[in-house]
Each structure stands twice: as C-alpha cells, then as structure tokens.
Amino acid sequence: MFFWFLGTVVLAVWFVFRDPSFDYRLLAVGAVLPALVDAPFGGARVLHSVTFSVALLAVLMLATPGRKPIRKMLLGLPVGTLLHLVFTGAWTDTTVFWWPFGGFGFDGAAHPVASRGWWNVPLEIIGIGLCVWIVRHAGLRDADRRAWFRRTGQLALPTR
Image (cartoon, rainbow, N blue to C red; front, side, top):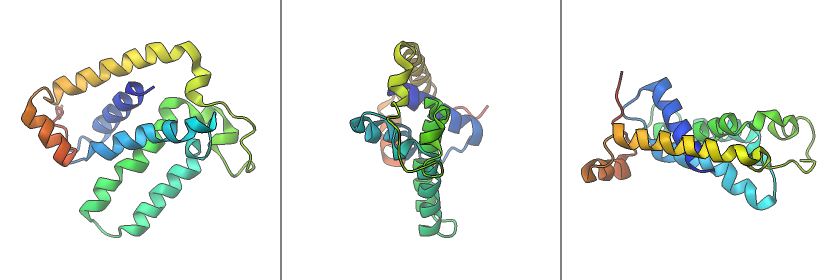
C-alpha cells in the first residue's frame, strides 16, 4: 500500500488546513514511514503506536520553538505518521496502538496492511484515483509546477 496512504493524507491535510504554503513532501514521507519501517519486523511495531507519533511531534515542537519556517516544514512528518495510523486502521489493535501503556511486547501483532488481505487492492485503486486527482488539480502535469513542488513541497490545490 503506497498510493492509498499518499492520496488520503494529502487530501485530508488539504481539506482541513487549505494552506497554500504547506510542505507536502514530509507529509508524504510520514504517511508511508510506519509501513516501511515496521514491515521488515513482520508486523506492527513501535511506529504503529500513537506514542511514537506524539513523541515525534513533541520533539519537533521542543526543538523548534517559536514560529520558525523549519517547524512548519517538519510538522508534516508527525502529521503524516498520525494520519497513517488513521488510514491503516492501526487503532484496531490496542496492544500496538497504545504501546507501551499496555505492556512492552507486541504479541505477534500483524502488520495492519497485511491483515487487511484482499481489501488492499480496492484501497490501492482508490489511492491511485486520489493521486490522479491531486496531480490534475495541482497542475503537476506541467514541468514548472512539478519543479516548484520538488523545490518547495507546495501544491496549488483549489481553495474552494
């Protein structure tokens, strides 16, 4: 699952914040980071816990006091990891989601993506559709807009 996470988190953040200066690059990284890091362990681990995302956000806020541009850019990473938990359904496994508050073990917790089975296919198709919508509405078929996105992380999505 790749496009499902990218499409859902970008549209969720765009829909909620409508901030034309938001940097979507680290949001995208945060959206796929838990799946990529925990997959080699054969199941959900620390990155699928709310503790990790909240700790990441706390470290970011403490390390960048005030209204610094770096804070705004880095904010996408913990927002992406939190939204990954939502769109992967990680909250359905309380042992992992609330780690370490329910204990330090993971009790062989399955990776949320793997446990969904065949449902991954329609979700990934929906994710591809969302990504196509983003590319079209942000004008990313244009080389200058793609270069702007690579440089700034900003998407020119419609405001209303």
